[in-house]
Image: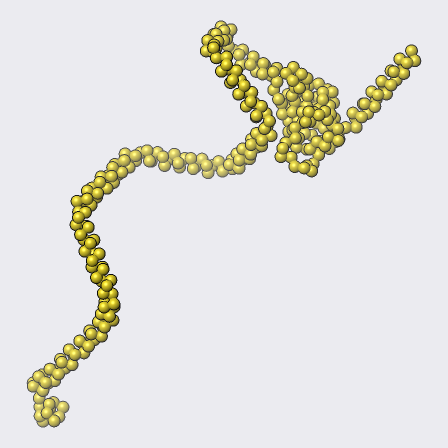
Amino acid sequence: MKRVLAFIVVALVAGSLAACGGSSGLQVKARFSDVGDLAPQAPVMMADVKVGSVDGIQLDQKRDLALVTMSLDPQARVPTDVVARVRRTSLLGERIVDLLVPNSTPRGAPLLQDGDTIRRTQIRPDLEDLVRQGTNVLAPIAASEVATLVDEGGRGFGGHGGDLRALLGNFRQIVHAFAGRTDEIQSLILSMNKLNGTLAPHAAAQARFLVNSERGLRMLRAESGRLRLAILALNRLSIGGKHILDAHADQMTRFFGQMRTILGVLRSQQHSITGFLHWAPFHNRNTQLVEFQQFNQVLQQFVICGLNDDPSDPARRCKQ
């Protein structure tokens, strides 16, 4: 009897110590749109290691969300940008809270403190959710329609078991590939969200651009007939020009040959041409001077002396 009492006392002391140890963890909160059958004392995991447990679940009436309170081990050093996700451990296993640290989290990032709230949360659908959604989808369909669908599916896929197996295998590989890169996919979605946020303030300008583009395309469509006629006319012009060039090719060849000869002669006489251009102005000047002197002599001898000679006047007398 004493041994039984001693065992009970030891158990109570151990329970008290465990309770005290649990209360020494960090108290954090997270809000989820749906927690399913998540229950208190459910484990909180990070990298498949238990780092805490669920203390309580209550309804946040202001936001119509489930408010989950958790106790975390301070030694876990959970960063503030962690993602809290509710999921099942297996197909029919219990629901847990899984903490996912993004790959973009730098070293030395700030850690969760007592009383903090995890802002980023997710719900991972399980078999029960998929069945419920399938039931909602198939509810309006009559039983006969379902039977017809199954019958036609059996006929269509009959004899293609190998193809279906390969298809499911490929699908499983694709799912695993995407599952291993959830952080990258999430980062891509966030980047697209930022892009949309950047483009949103310029929506009016983009709308005007699209309207102007539509108008331009409409005008091109309306003038397509004229453009086609203009292109055909240019084609005919090019063909006619080609015919003209072909018809006079020999004459043009002789013309360019003669021009080549003339240019060759001019190039060979370039020094003489330079000298001619240099002395031509002097020649013109000398010619003008000679003509002026001859004209003056004729004027003096024939006009002044012959017609206006007055021996009595010294100014009009030619002979001295």
